Length: 451
Image 1 (cartoon, rainbow, N blue to C red):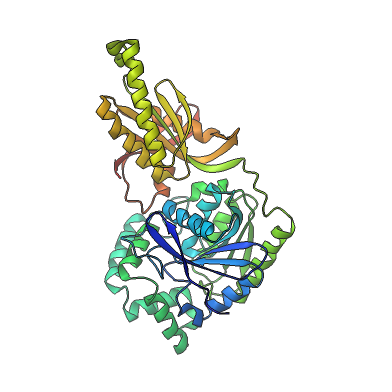
Image 2: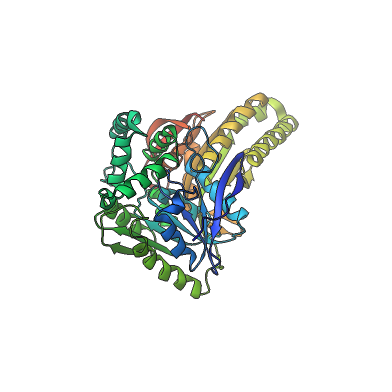
Protein backbone atom coordinates (compact mmCIF):
# COMPACT_ATOMS: atom_id res chain seq x y z
CA UNK A 1 0.00 0.00 0.00
CA UNK A 2 1.21 3.49 -0.88
CA UNK A 3 1.79 6.13 1.74
CA UNK A 4 -1.33 8.32 2.12
CA UNK A 5 -1.47 11.90 0.95
CA UNK A 6 -0.44 14.04 3.89
CA UNK A 7 -2.86 16.79 4.85
CA UNK A 8 -3.10 19.15 7.79
CA UNK A 9 -5.81 19.80 10.36
CA UNK A 10 -5.73 23.00 12.38
CA UNK A 11 -6.00 22.47 16.13
CA UNK A 12 -5.75 25.87 17.76
CA UNK A 13 -2.55 27.38 16.38
CA UNK A 14 -0.95 24.01 15.62
CA UNK A 15 -1.10 22.07 12.34
CA UNK A 16 -1.59 18.33 12.81
CA UNK A 17 -0.45 16.08 9.95
CA UNK A 18 -2.95 13.38 9.02
CA UNK A 19 -3.69 10.93 6.24
CA UNK A 20 -6.48 8.55 5.28
CA UNK A 21 -6.11 5.08 3.77
CA UNK A 22 -8.81 2.62 2.76
CA UNK A 23 -12.44 3.22 1.90
CA UNK A 24 -14.25 0.78 4.20
CA UNK A 25 -17.75 1.41 5.54
CA UNK A 26 -16.64 2.71 8.94
CA UNK A 27 -13.88 4.93 10.31
CA UNK A 28 -11.01 3.99 12.62
CA UNK A 29 -8.60 6.52 14.17
CA UNK A 30 -5.19 5.11 15.05
CA UNK A 31 -3.46 6.74 18.05
CA UNK A 32 0.11 5.52 18.09
CA UNK A 33 2.37 5.03 21.04
CA UNK A 34 5.40 6.94 22.20
CA UNK A 35 6.73 9.54 19.71
CA UNK A 36 6.64 7.29 16.64
CA UNK A 37 5.38 8.86 13.41
CA UNK A 38 2.78 7.12 11.24
CA UNK A 39 3.20 9.36 8.20
CA UNK A 40 6.87 9.87 7.34
CA UNK A 41 8.01 8.15 4.16
CA UNK A 42 10.37 5.92 6.14
CA UNK A 43 7.47 4.38 8.10
CA UNK A 44 5.86 3.17 4.90
CA UNK A 45 8.98 1.27 3.90
CA UNK A 46 8.73 -0.98 6.96
CA UNK A 47 6.37 -3.35 8.77
CA UNK A 48 3.96 -0.62 9.98
CA UNK A 49 2.78 -0.40 6.37
CA UNK A 50 1.64 -4.02 6.64
CA UNK A 51 -0.39 -3.21 9.74
CA UNK A 52 -1.97 -0.16 8.11
CA UNK A 53 -2.69 -2.07 4.90
CA UNK A 54 -4.50 -4.83 6.78
CA UNK A 55 -6.54 -2.31 8.78
CA UNK A 56 -7.41 -0.33 5.65
CA UNK A 57 -8.72 -3.51 3.98
CA UNK A 58 -11.91 -3.33 6.07
CA UNK A 59 -12.21 0.29 7.26
CA UNK A 60 -11.32 3.87 6.46
CA UNK A 61 -8.18 4.31 8.55
CA UNK A 62 -7.30 7.79 9.80
CA UNK A 63 -3.65 8.28 10.80
CA UNK A 64 -2.01 11.33 12.33
CA UNK A 65 1.26 12.42 13.90
CA UNK A 66 0.86 13.79 17.40
CA UNK A 67 1.81 17.44 17.80
CA UNK A 68 5.53 17.79 18.32
CA UNK A 69 6.29 14.59 16.38
CA UNK A 70 6.65 13.37 12.83
CA UNK A 71 5.23 15.74 10.23
CA UNK A 72 3.10 17.75 12.66
CA UNK A 73 4.18 21.13 13.96
CA UNK A 74 6.99 21.13 16.46
CA UNK A 75 5.90 22.63 19.76
CA UNK A 76 7.53 23.62 23.02
CA UNK A 77 7.20 20.72 25.42
CA UNK A 78 4.44 18.14 25.17
CA UNK A 79 0.78 19.14 25.67
CA UNK A 80 -1.60 17.66 28.19
CA UNK A 81 -4.11 14.93 27.37
CA UNK A 82 -6.93 17.43 26.92
CA UNK A 83 -5.04 19.27 24.17
CA UNK A 84 -4.23 15.98 22.47
CA UNK A 85 -7.91 15.03 22.59
CA UNK A 86 -8.62 18.33 20.84
CA UNK A 87 -6.16 17.24 18.16
CA UNK A 88 -8.10 14.00 17.57
CA UNK A 89 -11.33 15.95 17.18
CA UNK A 90 -9.65 18.35 14.76
CA UNK A 91 -8.33 15.46 12.66
CA UNK A 92 -11.71 13.70 12.66
CA UNK A 93 -13.45 16.91 11.60
CA UNK A 94 -10.92 17.53 8.82
CA UNK A 95 -11.28 13.94 7.60
CA UNK A 96 -15.08 14.19 7.64
CA UNK A 97 -15.49 11.57 10.36
CA UNK A 98 -18.52 12.05 12.60
CA UNK A 99 -17.97 8.89 14.68
CA UNK A 100 -15.11 6.40 14.68
CA UNK A 101 -13.52 3.55 16.55
CA UNK A 102 -10.44 4.79 18.39
CA UNK A 103 -7.40 2.49 18.56
CA UNK A 104 -4.95 3.49 21.29
CA UNK A 105 -1.65 1.66 21.68
CA UNK A 106 0.86 1.94 24.51
CA UNK A 107 1.39 5.59 25.45
CA UNK A 108 -1.66 6.50 23.33
CA UNK A 109 -3.92 4.43 25.59
CA UNK A 110 -4.64 6.86 28.47
CA UNK A 111 -5.61 9.63 26.09
CA UNK A 112 -7.97 7.39 24.10
CA UNK A 113 -9.60 6.22 27.34
CA UNK A 114 -10.28 9.85 28.26
CA UNK A 115 -11.52 10.60 24.75
CA UNK A 116 -14.00 7.71 24.78
CA UNK A 117 -15.32 8.69 28.22
CA UNK A 118 -15.55 12.41 27.39
CA UNK A 119 -16.85 12.16 23.82
CA UNK A 120 -18.97 8.99 23.54
CA UNK A 121 -20.94 10.68 20.76
CA UNK A 122 -17.76 10.63 18.63
CA UNK A 123 -16.53 7.18 19.74
CA UNK A 124 -18.17 4.06 18.28
CA UNK A 125 -15.72 1.66 19.93
CA UNK A 126 -12.43 1.60 21.79
CA UNK A 127 -9.45 -0.70 21.14
CA UNK A 128 -6.56 -0.70 23.61
CA UNK A 129 -3.33 -2.55 22.92
CA UNK A 130 -0.48 -3.03 25.41
CA UNK A 131 -1.37 -0.10 27.60
CA UNK A 132 -2.43 0.92 31.08
CA UNK A 133 -4.27 3.81 32.72
CA UNK A 134 -1.20 5.04 34.61
CA UNK A 135 2.58 4.82 34.63
CA UNK A 136 2.84 5.76 38.30
CA UNK A 137 3.15 3.12 41.02
CA UNK A 138 0.67 3.40 43.89
CA UNK A 139 -0.44 1.30 46.84
CA UNK A 140 -3.34 -0.08 44.80
CA UNK A 141 -1.47 -0.04 41.46
CA UNK A 142 1.87 -1.88 41.80
CA UNK A 143 3.24 -1.24 38.28
CA UNK A 144 5.41 1.48 36.82
CA UNK A 145 7.68 3.72 38.89
CA UNK A 146 7.12 6.01 41.85
CA UNK A 147 7.41 9.75 41.30
CA UNK A 148 10.93 9.73 42.76
CA UNK A 149 11.97 6.77 40.60
CA UNK A 150 10.60 8.53 37.52
CA UNK A 151 12.64 11.64 38.28
CA UNK A 152 15.78 9.54 38.61
CA UNK A 153 15.07 7.57 35.42
CA UNK A 154 14.44 10.72 33.40
CA UNK A 155 17.68 12.28 34.66
CA UNK A 156 19.57 9.09 33.81
CA UNK A 157 18.19 8.79 30.30
CA UNK A 158 18.18 12.46 29.27
CA UNK A 159 21.86 12.66 28.19
CA UNK A 160 21.51 9.39 26.24
CA UNK A 161 18.42 10.21 24.16
CA UNK A 162 19.23 10.02 20.46
CA UNK A 163 22.47 8.06 20.89
CA UNK A 164 22.95 4.65 19.23
CA UNK A 165 23.03 3.00 22.65
CA UNK A 166 19.72 4.54 23.68
CA UNK A 167 18.06 3.63 20.39
CA UNK A 168 19.15 0.01 20.85
CA UNK A 169 17.83 0.09 24.42
CA UNK A 170 14.44 1.26 23.14
CA UNK A 171 14.41 -1.45 20.47
CA UNK A 172 15.13 -4.06 23.11
CA UNK A 173 12.20 -2.76 25.17
CA UNK A 174 9.73 -2.49 22.29
CA UNK A 175 10.71 -5.23 19.84
CA UNK A 176 13.27 -7.67 21.31
CA UNK A 177 12.64 -10.29 18.62
CA UNK A 178 14.12 -7.91 16.00
CA UNK A 179 17.39 -7.17 17.79
CA UNK A 180 19.47 -9.62 15.75
CA UNK A 181 18.14 -8.43 12.39
CA UNK A 182 20.57 -5.79 11.12
CA UNK A 183 18.10 -4.42 8.56
CA UNK A 184 15.45 -4.09 11.28
CA UNK A 185 17.96 -2.32 13.53
CA UNK A 186 18.80 0.25 10.84
CA UNK A 187 15.15 0.77 9.96
CA UNK A 188 14.23 1.24 13.63
CA UNK A 189 17.02 3.80 14.09
CA UNK A 190 15.74 5.92 11.22
CA UNK A 191 12.13 5.68 12.43
CA UNK A 192 13.03 6.97 15.88
CA UNK A 193 15.32 9.74 14.65
CA UNK A 194 12.80 11.04 12.11
CA UNK A 195 9.89 10.96 14.56
CA UNK A 196 10.94 13.36 17.32
CA UNK A 197 13.77 15.40 18.75
CA UNK A 198 15.46 14.43 22.02
CA UNK A 199 13.76 17.28 23.87
CA UNK A 200 10.33 16.08 22.69
CA UNK A 201 11.14 12.54 23.85
CA UNK A 202 12.15 13.78 27.31
CA UNK A 203 9.11 16.07 27.65
CA UNK A 204 6.76 13.23 26.72
CA UNK A 205 8.39 10.93 29.23
CA UNK A 206 7.96 13.52 31.95
CA UNK A 207 4.28 13.89 31.11
CA UNK A 208 3.83 10.12 31.15
CA UNK A 209 5.41 9.99 34.59
CA UNK A 210 2.43 11.96 35.94
CA UNK A 211 -0.50 10.43 34.04
CA UNK A 212 -3.24 8.66 35.95
CA UNK A 213 -6.65 8.14 34.29
CA UNK A 214 -7.80 5.29 36.50
CA UNK A 215 -10.75 7.38 37.66
CA UNK A 216 -12.03 7.54 34.07
CA UNK A 217 -12.21 3.79 33.43
CA UNK A 218 -15.70 3.26 34.82
CA UNK A 219 -16.95 6.18 32.70
CA UNK A 220 -16.12 4.43 29.40
CA UNK A 221 -19.48 3.31 28.03
CA UNK A 222 -18.59 2.23 24.49
CA UNK A 223 -17.71 -1.32 23.34
CA UNK A 224 -14.09 -1.91 24.32
CA UNK A 225 -11.47 -4.48 23.30
CA UNK A 226 -8.25 -4.73 25.33
CA UNK A 227 -5.40 -6.94 24.12
CA UNK A 228 -1.80 -7.59 25.03
CA UNK A 229 1.07 -10.01 24.45
CA UNK A 230 1.91 -12.26 27.37
CA UNK A 231 5.66 -11.56 27.33
CA UNK A 232 5.32 -7.77 27.13
CA UNK A 233 6.86 -6.63 30.44
CA UNK A 234 4.33 -5.16 32.86
CA UNK A 235 1.66 -4.49 30.26
CA UNK A 236 -0.28 -7.75 30.72
CA UNK A 237 -1.11 -6.75 34.29
CA UNK A 238 -1.84 -3.13 33.39
CA UNK A 239 -4.07 -4.10 30.47
CA UNK A 240 -5.90 -6.63 32.64
CA UNK A 241 -6.40 -3.92 35.26
CA UNK A 242 -8.11 -1.54 32.86
CA UNK A 243 -10.18 -4.28 31.20
CA UNK A 244 -11.56 -5.31 34.59
CA UNK A 245 -12.69 -1.74 35.27
CA UNK A 246 -14.11 -0.67 31.91
CA UNK A 247 -17.74 -1.89 31.84
CA UNK A 248 -18.19 -4.80 29.44
CA UNK A 249 -14.62 -4.72 28.10
CA UNK A 250 -13.36 -7.80 26.26
CA UNK A 251 -9.83 -8.98 27.10
CA UNK A 252 -7.68 -10.98 24.66
CA UNK A 253 -4.28 -12.48 25.42
CA UNK A 254 -1.85 -12.97 22.53
CA UNK A 255 1.38 -15.00 22.46
CA UNK A 256 4.69 -13.21 22.01
CA UNK A 257 7.11 -10.90 23.78
CA UNK A 258 7.14 -7.83 21.53
CA UNK A 259 5.40 -4.68 22.67
CA UNK A 260 5.61 -3.15 19.20
CA UNK A 261 2.36 -3.39 17.25
CA UNK A 262 4.38 -3.36 14.02
CA UNK A 263 5.94 -6.75 14.86
CA UNK A 264 3.73 -9.57 13.55
CA UNK A 265 0.98 -7.05 12.79
CA UNK A 266 -1.42 -9.66 11.37
CA UNK A 267 -1.70 -11.23 14.81
CA UNK A 268 -3.12 -8.00 16.20
CA UNK A 269 -5.33 -7.12 13.25
CA UNK A 270 -6.79 -10.64 13.23
CA UNK A 271 -8.17 -9.82 16.69
CA UNK A 272 -9.28 -6.25 16.02
CA UNK A 273 -11.06 -6.87 12.72
CA UNK A 274 -13.80 -9.28 13.90
CA UNK A 275 -14.46 -7.11 16.96
CA UNK A 276 -15.05 -3.98 14.86
CA UNK A 277 -16.96 -5.81 12.14
CA UNK A 278 -19.32 -7.22 14.77
CA UNK A 279 -20.11 -3.74 16.10
CA UNK A 280 -20.64 -2.42 12.58
CA UNK A 281 -22.93 -5.31 11.67
CA UNK A 282 -25.03 -4.73 14.79
CA UNK A 283 -26.23 -1.43 13.34
CA UNK A 284 -25.17 0.49 16.47
CA UNK A 285 -22.12 2.21 14.99
CA UNK A 286 -23.86 5.49 14.23
CA UNK A 287 -26.18 5.35 17.23
CA UNK A 288 -24.98 7.69 19.97
CA UNK A 289 -27.52 7.70 22.79
CA UNK A 290 -25.41 9.56 25.32
CA UNK A 291 -26.74 9.56 28.88
CA UNK A 292 -23.42 9.61 30.76
CA UNK A 293 -20.15 11.42 30.06
CA UNK A 294 -16.90 12.22 31.81
CA UNK A 295 -16.99 15.93 32.62
CA UNK A 296 -15.36 18.49 34.87
CA UNK A 297 -17.77 20.49 37.00
CA UNK A 298 -16.97 23.91 38.44
CA UNK A 299 -18.75 25.75 41.23
CA UNK A 300 -18.02 29.36 42.17
CA UNK A 301 -19.55 31.73 44.69
CA UNK A 302 -18.83 35.18 46.02
CA UNK A 303 -17.15 35.39 49.41
CA UNK A 304 -18.85 37.71 51.93
CA UNK A 305 -21.89 38.37 49.73
CA UNK A 306 -24.15 39.20 52.68
CA UNK A 307 -21.72 41.84 53.94
CA UNK A 308 -21.48 43.34 50.44
CA UNK A 309 -25.28 43.46 50.15
CA UNK A 310 -25.51 45.27 53.48
CA UNK A 311 -22.78 47.71 52.42
CA UNK A 312 -24.19 48.51 48.97
CA UNK A 313 -27.90 48.10 49.42
CA UNK A 314 -30.24 46.24 47.10
CA UNK A 315 -29.70 48.35 43.99
CA UNK A 316 -25.92 48.61 44.34
CA UNK A 317 -25.64 44.89 45.00
CA UNK A 318 -27.83 44.07 42.00
CA UNK A 319 -25.64 46.19 39.72
CA UNK A 320 -22.45 44.60 41.11
CA UNK A 321 -23.94 41.14 40.68
CA UNK A 322 -24.73 41.89 37.05
CA UNK A 323 -21.09 42.91 36.47
CA UNK A 324 -19.90 39.76 38.24
CA UNK A 325 -22.12 37.56 36.09
CA UNK A 326 -20.87 39.27 32.92
CA UNK A 327 -17.24 38.62 33.97
CA UNK A 328 -17.93 34.94 34.70
CA UNK A 329 -19.79 34.42 31.43
CA UNK A 330 -16.97 36.01 29.42
CA UNK A 331 -14.52 33.56 30.93
CA UNK A 332 -16.84 30.61 30.31
CA UNK A 333 -16.96 31.53 26.64
CA UNK A 334 -13.20 32.02 26.54
CA UNK A 335 -12.50 28.55 28.00
CA UNK A 336 -15.37 26.67 26.31
CA UNK A 337 -17.29 26.15 29.54
CA UNK A 338 -20.99 25.56 29.63
CA UNK A 339 -23.16 27.41 32.12
CA UNK A 340 -25.52 24.96 33.78
CA UNK A 341 -27.10 27.02 36.52
CA UNK A 342 -26.87 30.30 38.38
CA UNK A 343 -28.24 30.62 41.88
CA UNK A 344 -27.84 33.96 43.62
CA UNK A 345 -24.15 34.79 43.48
CA UNK A 346 -22.93 31.32 42.47
CA UNK A 347 -22.25 29.64 39.14
CA UNK A 348 -22.35 25.98 38.18
CA UNK A 349 -20.63 25.12 34.88
CA UNK A 350 -19.25 22.08 33.11
CA UNK A 351 -16.24 21.51 30.85
CA UNK A 352 -15.04 18.70 28.62
CA UNK A 353 -11.53 18.93 30.08
CA UNK A 354 -10.13 19.75 33.52
CA UNK A 355 -7.26 21.98 32.36
CA UNK A 356 -9.69 24.37 30.68
CA UNK A 357 -11.87 24.33 33.80
CA UNK A 358 -8.92 25.16 36.06
CA UNK A 359 -7.76 28.03 33.86
CA UNK A 360 -11.31 29.36 33.67
CA UNK A 361 -11.71 29.27 37.46
CA UNK A 362 -8.36 31.04 37.95
CA UNK A 363 -9.28 33.67 35.36
CA UNK A 364 -12.58 34.29 37.14
CA UNK A 365 -10.94 34.70 40.56
CA UNK A 366 -8.46 37.19 39.08
CA UNK A 367 -11.01 39.15 37.03
CA UNK A 368 -13.58 39.71 39.79
CA UNK A 369 -10.96 41.34 42.01
CA UNK A 370 -11.27 44.38 39.74
CA UNK A 371 -14.86 44.57 40.99
CA UNK A 372 -13.72 44.44 44.60
CA UNK A 373 -14.92 40.86 44.97
CA UNK A 374 -13.39 37.57 46.04
CA UNK A 375 -14.76 34.23 44.87
CA UNK A 376 -14.01 30.66 45.84
CA UNK A 377 -14.11 27.83 43.32
CA UNK A 378 -14.25 24.04 43.48
CA UNK A 379 -13.70 21.53 40.67
CA UNK A 380 -14.12 17.79 40.23
CA UNK A 381 -13.90 15.45 37.26
CA UNK A 382 -16.19 12.44 37.18
CA UNK A 383 -18.88 10.53 35.37
CA UNK A 384 -21.99 12.68 35.04
CA UNK A 385 -25.53 11.81 34.07
CA UNK A 386 -27.08 13.75 31.20
CA UNK A 387 -30.62 14.79 32.15
CA UNK A 388 -32.51 17.19 29.88
CA UNK A 389 -29.20 18.29 28.42
CA UNK A 390 -27.66 19.09 31.81
CA UNK A 391 -25.10 17.19 33.86
CA UNK A 392 -26.02 15.68 37.22
CA UNK A 393 -25.12 12.89 39.61
CA UNK A 394 -22.67 12.30 42.42
CA UNK A 395 -19.78 14.03 40.61
CA UNK A 396 -21.76 17.28 40.72
CA UNK A 397 -22.34 16.97 44.45
CA UNK A 398 -18.63 16.32 44.99
CA UNK A 399 -17.74 19.47 43.06
CA UNK A 400 -20.14 21.55 45.13
CA UNK A 401 -18.73 20.16 48.39
CA UNK A 402 -15.16 20.93 47.28
CA UNK A 403 -16.13 24.51 46.49
CA UNK A 404 -17.43 24.83 50.03
CA UNK A 405 -13.97 23.92 51.32
CA UNK A 406 -12.15 26.56 49.26
CA UNK A 407 -10.73 29.68 50.90
CA UNK A 408 -11.42 33.18 49.52
CA UNK A 409 -9.68 33.57 46.17
CA UNK A 410 -8.76 29.88 46.07
CA UNK A 411 -9.37 27.32 43.33
CA UNK A 412 -9.62 23.93 45.00
CA UNK A 413 -9.70 20.65 43.06
CA UNK A 414 -9.99 16.92 43.71
CA UNK A 415 -7.09 14.52 43.19
CA UNK A 416 -8.96 13.22 40.14
CA UNK A 417 -8.58 16.59 38.44
CA UNK A 418 -4.91 16.79 39.37
CA UNK A 419 -4.14 13.30 38.03
CA UNK A 420 -5.62 13.98 34.59
CA UNK A 421 -3.89 17.28 33.76
CA UNK A 422 -0.34 15.91 33.56
CA UNK A 423 1.71 17.95 31.11
CA UNK A 424 -0.49 21.05 31.39
CA UNK A 425 2.06 23.09 33.34
CA UNK A 426 -0.49 23.62 36.11
CA UNK A 427 1.03 23.27 39.58
CA UNK A 428 -0.72 22.29 42.78
CA UNK A 429 -0.33 22.58 46.52
CA UNK A 430 -1.64 19.75 48.68
CA UNK A 431 -4.46 20.72 51.03
CA UNK A 432 -4.68 17.38 52.80
CA UNK A 433 -7.54 14.90 53.14
CA UNK A 434 -11.07 16.09 53.83
CA UNK A 435 -14.44 14.63 54.66
CA UNK A 436 -17.08 15.90 52.23
CA UNK A 437 -20.57 16.03 53.69
CA UNK A 438 -22.70 13.19 52.36
CA UNK A 439 -19.83 11.76 50.27
CA UNK A 440 -18.17 8.52 51.43
CA UNK A 441 -14.45 8.37 52.15
CA UNK A 442 -11.68 10.90 52.62
CA UNK A 443 -10.86 13.15 49.68
CA UNK A 444 -7.42 14.53 48.82
CA UNK A 445 -7.76 18.15 47.75
CA UNK A 446 -5.29 20.45 46.02
CA UNK A 447 -5.09 24.20 45.54
CA UNK A 448 -3.94 25.71 42.25
CA UNK A 449 -0.67 27.57 42.69
CA UNK A 450 0.13 28.37 39.04
CA UNK A 451 -1.37 27.84 35.59
